[in-house]
Length: 582
Ligand code: PEP
Ligand code: MG
Image (cartoon, rainbow, N blue to C red; front, side):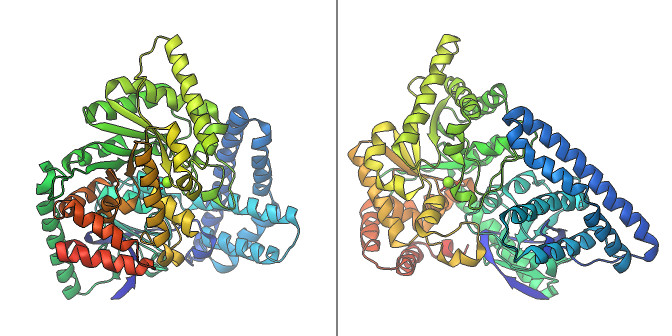
């Protein structure tokens, strides 16, 4: 039995058989050998992977050339040349022969050798070639390891997925019936992969460092999403203890769900609106069963992931309309496309950036690709007559972006008027406040919108300069850092002055102890993963508004994030001890 400690990102306990997905990271392809008689077959497999990758690259190059022009597709011509590099190919083949190694391992060994040789080269051109080799290499590995993706697509029994990393798009594709938990070597608590696990309501642990090499497919593992543990080959006593723990957790959750029909109201009658965050319309049943009063964040970018084309206006209209209708008369806040960071669109094959979270993404991308943006705006506007839709823009950093986005919205409205297509002309427009510069100028931004929605996931990462997907620095990712509370207080003050409402839709709002602080700071609405709603409702119903305000006031006087965290957890424990252990 081996116990690994990581970061708990989605609660619950699961026991089951592991399905290990080998990542396309050249440094963690496990060493595997074959019988000498299998060598020829392995070489054919490698050559097939080259052929397959070539066909895929040709298709991508054509698509990019058609959509964006030849200057953007040239990179793929360079990639195609690498595929024809005989030295590289021969090196891999001789490695397969020499070591009787599986193709993926031989390939990763050769690539590592190349990277080592290039590591100290100072030439910009050569460095770029290394990055091209990495890109192509990843594709070839993906094709060699493709059988695992197939395995994931055709699951027949419950599995616990173990991987070095999982992208949000891979997580989104997981078969919810059969994947009962997952665990990864890397990742942070507010990565979109972690957020997906919580929406899928399956236990998950990230940042386990080496779980993907410590476990083999078929091994029994326990994933304890409450304590952040992965237990490999558990003994009988551990299995029994964890089964009990799982049972206790399920009972605890069903007890909480009894609050479903009760209002989120403090003891002295202050109403807080509790809404849900979704990534797909398929999550609506969960939104309704957990008693949400609407959807406060619909992350529409998932619509664009895992497909080779862009969604059309009609398709988007259909999806937004469905969500609007099923939630009627409750509101649905649709966030416009927020790609980038850890979410990439497979259809666009955007160039890799040094700092993806700070790069050409979200509203910046939409303002440059007005064709894609306007298509979405038109779809949202058209769906707005089918329910109570609101719209908000992600990653606003200055007034100009907000004005440009609103300008394009006006253009979309004019077009629809000309085409005699109906829309709700008074739909509320909001700005996400998730960049410190935006938080500091909320007095000015408030003039352009009807509401603010604070994206604490990003606001924390940008304010504290802590990458939200990096497990190594997760200890610095502090929602309770005094800087964060001060920024939120400023946002609320400016929103109140301008008489607009303000919500929090980051993960912080779904943490019961943090939710009390946010309510005390004057936040009107909290939007969170549906599963978190009953817990937050429970604590709101246990305090008076005066208590919440006093708590926020006291918290603002502490000097460190740790003091504020301990203070709010102690408060929560005194109100209801059971919420802290889950
Ligand atoms: C946020 O940043 O807090 C947010 C809600 O948006 P996302 O998590 O999708 O970046
Ligand atoms: Mg964000």
